[in-house]
Image (cartoon, rainbow, N blue to C red; front, side):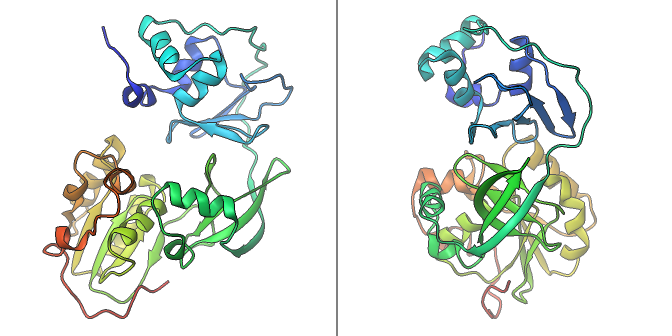
Length: 305
């Protein structure tokens, strides 16, 4: 019988877990499943599970996380006690779950940007530090974004894409404003590095001391990999540093069969899911000696925006 630990439990589908608990979504839009919150009483569904990220967000509380974060809240128990519940197959709630209404496909509450300013809020700076990123590196590429979801105000670190949308992150929220697109950091170099998200981009710069002799393509979602192909055709060298999960592996294969010459350069964080995972686990070990032989030293004009 499978014995779950913290790592394997986080990989379990939150949607499947809720279904096993008898909880059904109120509406579904693409990767987003909306529920009446299992953490409190409410009349309008404001609890979202994103199946691509396998993460939940309770907009009524401003909290979110992974399956373990949800389980310990629902059952009012410790992490160890929740893991034991998983291992014995006990998914019952300790309270009466709200009855679901009719499930229907409706547009989700859109993210509406209400303000953009320099990144300086102490809570966002603290979040960057928990991810091992020097705020001085992040402020060169990120903004402090104020936005609403369903009319309720929030703020987060914003990373702009080439179409004017923003990837949004803080300690409890992962989302994006429309339009969704890739981000290109063009410094006029002959080599490009492809990354999945901007936290990995910032993490790579952290490991490289804030300097690089490469341009960067940040996908902001592996689903947008095809959009990057025409851009990458213009580079002599393309290095892939994507996540070590099913989606990342599939994206690597997509690039390898696209007709452009690519190198999978993810070996330096082998054993870790992504670059940020490597950074926060290994600390501030300089990266240059590890990959210098892979990336040609082109004449640098700095990292452009």
